[in-house]
Length: 283
Image (cartoon, rainbow, N blue to C red; front, side, top):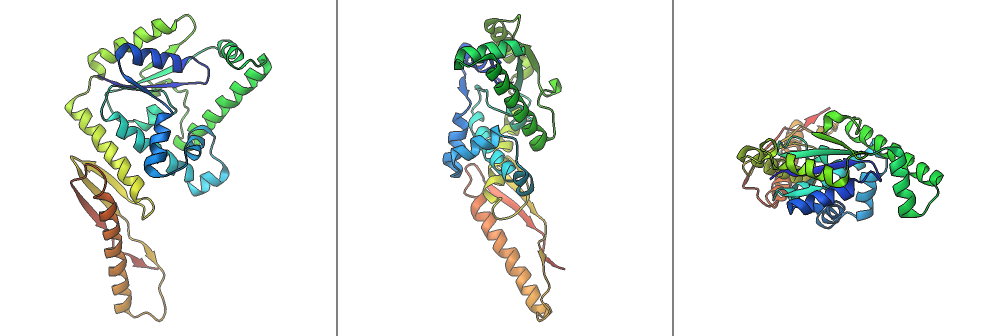
């Protein structure tokens, strides 16, 4: 069966619809649980991970790319989770975190502003003006987040397989539509799509564990991880002889290989690595 992701604006009934679909299909329904898993596994405070998925990146985030590193951890945790299939995910950016997997059914849920305001008023016991201000602020934050992390408009219908307008549609009607689509052949896992999911999960995990050591291109296939590290720039010391510089380059290259190998071979499911490290060069 398919993996289903729900994208929605706040107070658009997306959570209720996701839970309805999961219940009808007997799927696991997850959202914030992924933050807890990523926090525990990668030893990052949950509050930081939540902020990375909720708030628009600050100027400092854009310079240091800290937000992208947190998102990478959340992606790795989500991929590890959905490999087992039969999952409904209704957290932020599921359509992007699971991009490229053919048996992921991507749903976008929208609702009229008046409906969203009424729902928030009833749930939070706030005034209409307060509800409108909160929703508009939340929508702005999410739009900024998508633009800065992925350079996309999160409302673009081309990102989704189905867009559901919760207005004339009831939750039950929308649930039936999603369940029917998820049960069809279009989103049925194949040996190829499942292998692609497992490879992506491994790639994502490996990228996270080695990011503190170096930047690298990572691909995985059938348990074999292929890593390519570009040569590092070294400053030329005027007193260093050619032999000393050659020995130093050898040491850096070998040390980096040992560090990468130790980390990657410890990742569950990795059978072997093919690691190419370009030789450091002097400038």
